[in-house]
Structure formats: C-alpha cells, structure tokens
Length: 407
Image 1 (cartoon, rainbow, N blue to C red):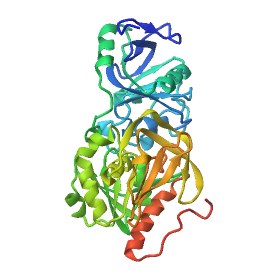
Image 2 (cartoon, helix red, strand yellow; image 1 turned 60 degrees about the vertical axis):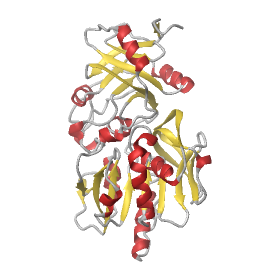
Image 3 (cartoon, helix red, strand yellow; image 1 turned 60 degrees about the horizontal axis):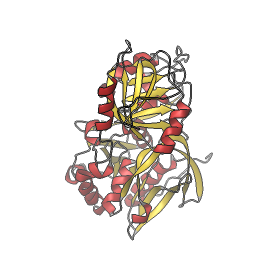
Image 4 (spheres, rainbow, N blue to C red; image 1 turned 180 degrees about the vertical axis):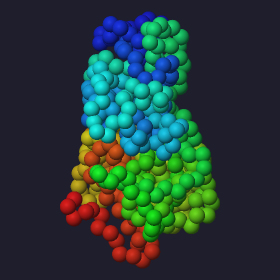
C-alpha cells in the first residue's frame, strides 16, 4: 500500500479525539486522554495486570508508547508513592499510553488523583476506546512499531503531516536516551521499601556504601539496596570510573534505562570496563546488564517486539529454579557472543533469549529482567542479597541467606 493511503483500522472509535499513526500509514482512531499535542515514539505492549503507574513512570519506557493488554486501567487512580522515576518533577517515563476501556473514577484508599489529571501533569498523551488485542496482535506480527500519537479535543488532525512525522522518525536504534533521564548531579539515597501501615522507611545506619550509575534507575531498586543496609550514592550516567572510585564504594550498581545500549555505551562502556577491572563487586540490571555485556566483549541486538510485562518465566541456571519476573526491554544480549570467561546465568523460557551473566572468578554479574519488580512478582529479590553477599565476602563477612526462610 502507498504510504499516503489512510488505512483506518476496523477497531476505531466513532468519536476520534486521539489518533495513533504507524510508520506504514495505518491510522487508529480513539478517544483522547491526558496531555494534548503529538509525539513520535515506539509502540510496545505490556501484559502486566497491575501497576500501571509504576509502568508509566519507569524511565526505561522513555521514547515509547505503552499499550496495556489488561483492559481496565485507571480504576485505582494514582498517588505520589507509586512513582518510579527518580526525579518526578522532570517526569521521565513513557510518552504515550493506550487503553481499551473508558477510564472510570478512582476507587482506592491510596488514590490522590485520577489518571487523566495525572497524565496531563506528566505530559503523557493517551488514547483509549480501541481494541488493544488487535493492536497487540499487530505488534506481535510486525514487531514494535514506530508511530506518532496525537490528542486534540477538537478532533482536528493534519493526517498527512502526522504520517510524515511517523515515517521520518528513526526509532530507538542508535538512540542514547539515558542522557535524557539521568540525574543532573549526585544524590544520596536512604529510602527503604514500603510497609503497609508505615509507608517507606529510612536507612540511617548503613553497613555498606554502593555507588549506582543512573541510566534511568527505578526507585524500588534503590529502596531494596537501602533495605539491605546500604547507603546508595547515585551518580549521573556520564560519571567516569574515577568519579565512582573516588567515593571508595563497597560495590557498584549499573542501573536500568531506555534506548540503545550500544549508543549509551559509547561513553559508559569504557567506564564499566575500568570498574570491572577494579575488583569491586558489580551488579547490573536491564540496560546495565546489556552495557556490562558490551564491556566484556559481547554484542547486543534489537528484539522483534521486546519483553514488557510482569509474568515472564526465567530460569536461573545457578539455582536450577524457574522464576516469574518483570521484564521491560527492547534490546537483548546475544548469548552466542558471550566471550570465554563469561557465563550465561539466566534465560527466558519464552524465547530462549539471554537474561543474565556472570564473570568467572570475579564478583561481577547482571540480569536482563527487573528483580525489584514494582510492579510484578518478588521471585528475584534474592539477587540483591546475592550482590550484598559479594560485598560481604570481600569484607571477610559471613553471607546472608539469599532468600527469607519463608521463600
């Protein structure tokens, strides 16, 4: 079909105040919510049943539009406690969202704001009232789609101009987005995990000092580290190895984040190589995992549709156990490219893609999935204790049990 031909999908709304236009010219019409305007991004789908606020505020979704496969979004409203980006005032996370059902008034004791107002405040453009199953099937067949999402309450859109924008956008390959979501200066993190009836705690007597490189870190990662007795100093993505080592840390954490690891790796990989060579324990998650792999000599690749959800089965070869985990990534480490001395430790049971590695003989490991969840299951929380145990071993201290007795 010609790019200039409007291919209106069969699941469109009769009152279009928002549109999604794919790079191939497909137009999907629905109702608008949240911010107005238009923006280019990659369309993906997320299969999680809960946690839409945490999903939309995950900085790893920068440059993306999230299609929720669960039909009812917004029922529990929003609140200030469930935001995951480190600096909410800067509103890092997904730029667009797509829902099936109409948004209802919030009904939850923790709700402080409805979803529409919250989306407006964060500048997120939303589209609802479409068949999200059909859109998900399209993405599964064709892969994650470059697109433009637009919202105008008047329903007036310059379709040809929006199609041109969608065609022209180059996508996430070779795009460094970590520089857009990282903090501007260092900060010390003390907040510990949320406890019902008490809220978040604070670690004021830390036993360890961890430096975290922020490529788009989530708050719950930092909370879990602090909850295990760590003072966490967070540094910008562009920090050098010398910057990190100047803090004399007990360990180094490489965070999650958005974009192409090869692009961010242009400046981050040399730093990571030096940190690995320093002998310090190093732990990476998601983008941090991918860039650690690059630093060790492996390769990364763009995935067809990526992994986005809270129900992904992953096998941990180090324990022989299968865990259900949270995932959010569109690039992956090519397991065939792992060099000698680097072992694959985790694998996706959906498609066999790499989900973890470790360096033989060094206290260095990483995982592709999100063990902190938020949202999602807590099967992989033990990985944070594994990291702390590497620090304890280096200090000559006895290890903590990797899992609680009840786990």
